[in-house]
Image (cartoon, rainbow, N blue to C red; front, side, top):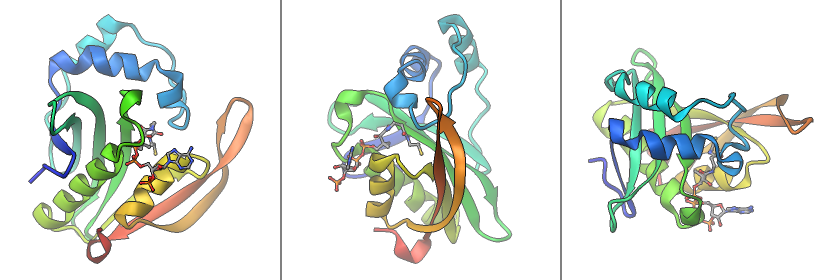
Length: 175
Ligand SMILES: CC(C)(COP(=O)(O)OP(=O)(O)OC[C@H]1O[C@@H](n2cnc3c(N)ncnc32)[C@H](O)[C@@H]1OP(=O)(O)O)[C@@H](O)C(=O)NCCC(=O)NCCS
């Protein structure tokens, strides 16, 4: 169920902490994700060991290539509201930059959204993305997300302000 054309999504393991720590400190990966202060590898390993178990309300999954079974990123879905049938795609990163532009991000978004609709019975998935994050916006559009709103100048990085787009996807729109 959590397998797509290029990636498989799986639970994160404590051994993944080192790769995730590398991605966390890569300024290009984090450029549009909000700058958190540096943390030590030991702190990240500790976090990886005490990660809460995934639930339908909140899950974080590793993104693995189908061919080489290499961990290249992660995706998180949460804030699930079963009354209204909506969840938020909170985060996605292809941390291994040599895999950017290969359709892995798009496939991971497609797989997690399909899971939200078909297994969790949801009607909508929404997300926030910085409008200038061209690769992310393009990847979301390819899966079927459409722009639903804009929070003007709500994201600041490098001394400049950028708009946030709210994007949404209905279960019938998944491509
Ligand atoms: C956003 C991200 C997950 C996308 O994953 P990816 O595997 O690189 O994306 P895909 O290959 O599936 O799709 C990217 C699309 O954007 C296009 N693209 C990439 N960079 C671009 C750029 N600078 N200008 C225009 N288009 C661009 C690609 O050509 C591709 O479009 P196509 O399918 O029409 O060719 C990945 O780039 C990433 O991890 N970025 C850093 C973290 C981040 O910003 N996450 C999103 C937070 S909301």
